[in-house]
Length: 369
Image 1 (cartoon, rainbow, N blue to C red):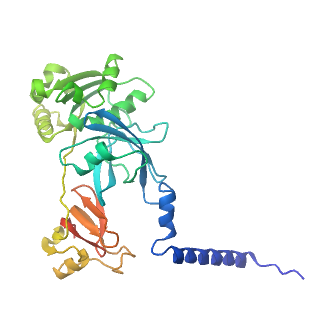
Image 2: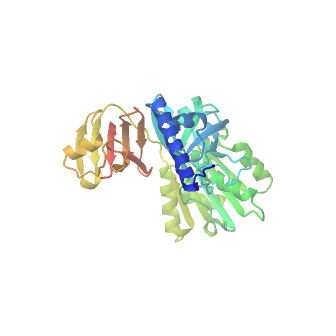
Image 3: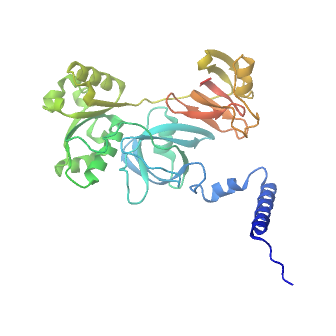
């Protein structure tokens, strides 16, 4: 006599066997989980935290490189001109920085690029320019930002850039040049200390020779800083163009004043960048910005406990790092994960979230609570 097991029971039995297998795997791999081993074997897999693998690093100038990154399967794509936050581990400390995308939106190989210029005392920029190698796995966030041309680029475009401020403009330029149809009338005014310091110099000059843009280079070591008030001397129809400007604060302040005085501020789009150096350590001053409360905390006290001791109403749940009921934005500063020792840093606008129950101050920090 043959007994047939109902389908529902077979499914339950299969699920039960699977659950037991998972539990057994967790037991023998403790303190790591099976997912931790999968992250080692396949860090770019679907379902993992978003990561990328450095595929290549191409020199651009004596202190700038283009980093080619293959993003994991959770990558949702980008619009040229946007920026991306990347996390890299430098000497045991995880550092997050934002960089403009320099690749068009649909590279045939599926990779994306950022172009990084090393700045004095810049931990991440110097790591990427001097020490990073192909094969390095980095953390990624999704692309964001509205410094973009839009779906339909205007007929007349002006880019005003200086130094590494050329990076988002290059992403937009590459997208337009590769797109089907007529290329807009594009003028680029770019300043750098010397001809050798112009990032993407070879590509820009080739596009200029091909008539795909008009390139105006200004070398500040010989000619001084670009005077925005004289932009009409080199671009006669500047007031008729839609403008994208990126560079140091002084350049952008002058551009905003000039376009506002001309009554066409709505035609100017700006993207500001700034080098940020954060000092990490053990403990520090913790500010809870919403309640305007500041307290001192050592490097072993969870931010949750420090906030409660200071009278701040802190959201919490399991207090063990499992339920994520204590998550809060890290507006600025550095915190250390008490389980792993990893340090997470943030500057205003990064949008970094931390678990206050398992994070401690690793220097001065500001929590948005």
